[in-house]
Length: 299
Image (cartoon, rainbow, N blue to C red; front, top):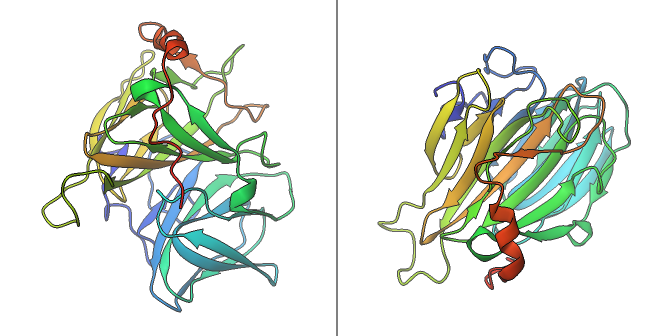
């Protein structure tokens, strides 16, 4: 499990709290080659830089506002108070471009990465342009920000989105996979970056004495062994190289967020999945249920 689960602090490198899958990262997992993630916590006035590389990137503010400079042009990302405050401005940089990220007030920022060859233009996607999807129903309700999906963003390889799951709900459910190139399915590596918080309707307040947690499950879909049943907190990362994955569970009392980064070797940039046949029937139950009234989350 150590190859697939990285608790906060276990994948740090230089200025980055998380540095996985990038060209200069410490990730050493056999066969991992299509996705990457960097996360930094910037003090007021601080900055981080990524050198030009054959990878496409998308800059995602997690908390705070940022200035991002690409090819000498600076783009202002208005950001947000936290990942639970609705969508943020994000910036797609394309390939072969150095990127500098700074923050006057400080904050936390993620950069999703994928080795790529085709060139697409830099694009600023404003928060109000981000497609917000309420997926599932009942206790499978979740909120998805589809700023980096094929329908919303022209890109070469990766698919990027973020998901918010209210306390007590399950997302990435029913369990599904995308580890084969075949009719109805595409082969995609996937990264889950998590954050958790005390739910606003909790009978307690503040953060003293609380330990916001969630859970993530990955298990084998074929002869390749994988068995992840991880307790996750803010800053933890779970890698999904193959296999059934789900549910991602928000424990009662604690909301769960995750940033998804997916890419693969296939010809088509598309998220096509197969449900675990033992559990796929769950989808049919959503027709008779309402979406969780706590959604959507917004500023």
